[in-house]
Image 1 (cartoon, helix red, strand yellow):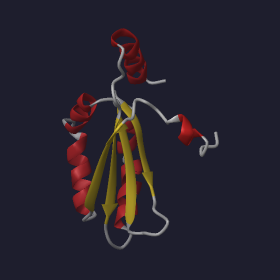
Image 2: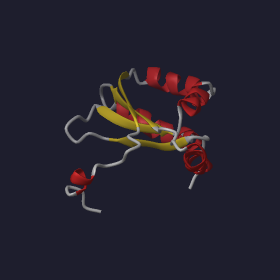
Image 3: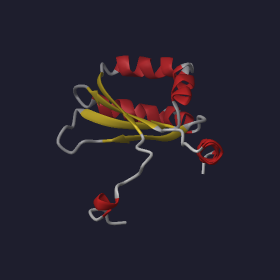
Image 4: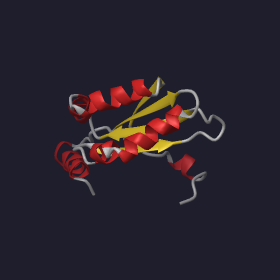
Length: 129
């Protein structure tokens, strides 16, 4: 368990509310396989490992849509807006921007806040653990 997760848990106990995780879905779209090349270079350069090691990062994972070979989906989750802000202030963001420009990628961004109430009981019937 990451230190950030432990801190969020302790905050829940101390102040009776949890810090809400923020998940950002970024769809990178390009041409001629450039979105996948971008993700591969992010991995090979060590950038993905560095982001995953940042305080507050919960998940940083690329996925490939089955029906769109020119798009990749990044699911990027953080334990707080403060953690995202610190991440955005790192020099690593300049490297990511350079790579994105190198591969001429366009972005569609969705942002989600964690539902701290969890999965409703009636919905759990549809989930196999």
